[in-house]
Image (cartoon, rainbow, N blue to C red; front, side, top):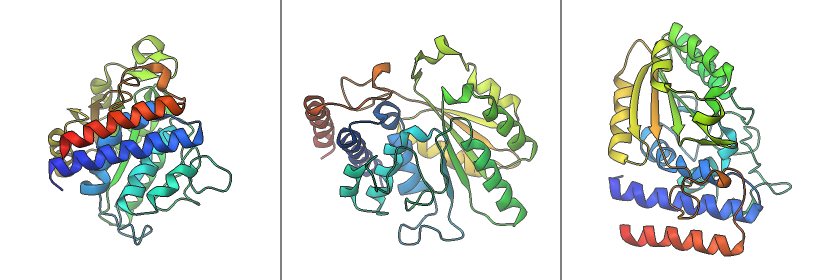
Length: 276
């Protein structure tokens, strides 16, 4: 895909996110929208995956450590062909494959159940170490929230990854600056994030998480880095693409009503028209 195609696809992913959360009348749109561009690049360009064979042995693995933004994962999986886009409207409904947090047993394309914040990076480290021990060349990607990295288990996993030189592991921190209780620097500041990961022997790259050129360059640099894991610190906008959600902490974990849904979809339609 070229950059314009990626932008169009990411916009469709955002429409899916808003549609799913609205249909569920619950969910986490803000952080789902902020990570949509990186998720789009991962699933449409970066990762070795096959929607027709979700469990193929040599596939790259993905762990959504901040599992509450499952709508972003579900929307990108649907748009990539793992299941029908129409199924997004079943989010959080009884009997649906698309529950509030990712479930490896139920959802095609999900490599790890997640939701308890701080735990996903440990699972990703296990996958990366397994690949090393079995002399397999698949890569492992994990998306963490900038509020999530206040959890101590994240740093235990980071210490392990650096010590074990897991250069097949790439951690992406969605640095949108807001968590459920407010700005991250006011709740329990994880800054300086870059210095912390460097202290745990990571190669660190800082990018604009909405710039596909920077996203592409960062993942190529991560692949080329040997002898240590990589952390990509992606500066993003919470609620990206929806005018009244952008940089608003109140949209961390609530669904738009019918009127708000219409405004949100019109915002995204306008963005899509600009890419036509």
